[in-house]
Image 1 (cartoon, rainbow, N blue to C red):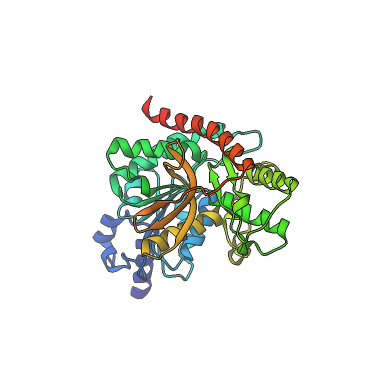
Image 2: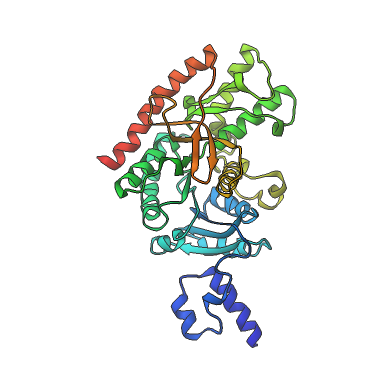
Length: 371
């Protein structure tokens, strides 16, 4: 009986780290005796919005990542259940759950990487602007927590509309005096994943062999695939360029309509090896892309060389204060923003359209904080 009580107390210490005082009064084990530093060397990662459609799949994928030693799962609802489920996986990362605003600071303290998928998904008939009023306040609150508890963490922001929520986060950090433009990254990886897949279909090759730079932003015409810079080098007809550009820009709408109101792109954010285990989640697609991007950030934090990804960041590539383009990731976040390279006439015209819409979205985010 004593051994069973000991094991139960250890499990409880992982799932309910806020119950420290109660444990130390009557438990046979103290939290300090548990794997507080994780089961293996690695980084501490927090997912804010872990019980949502993207968050659940993303939590599973990050639990599988060998670079993660501690995984904090935060949400305003259902966090304990998701935490219990994910914690049963026999991988090295220690999982802890945090429920509601009172536990936000505990979830964020000491984190190396914070991933924010929190918010509501886009539904049929809902524009990305419709998302703004709902998600802007959520992002503001979570970023205020980051300024208090882990101001030097890399932040991966997924909450839509990214074109506006990244400026919101930047303004929150500026107000707190903690803004480091290299550490705030808008996750546009899903656009790249889609572009690689759609281009591979046209070329008839494995999408894992394709690399399509996608620049601009993360909504509609602001999503600009640079098809002239595809690797491996190839050429497309005018018809193929129009088809691919339109499909990449409207990939989110395609998924929303196909799901007939059941959710947005969460399935495509996970990998094929994990799909059999999480096919019941409604947002795996976004989680797959987010997990790939998070892994790239972690490898950068580890010091790996040559880690290049597209992300929506504070930028001087154009006259806009934020822009999505290739960045080189390292221990300091987005350590280098790479130039756009040579654009053809079609892409230059698309760039002008993207900048016009991006400008308004950025202003909208800044105004939300400064008004």
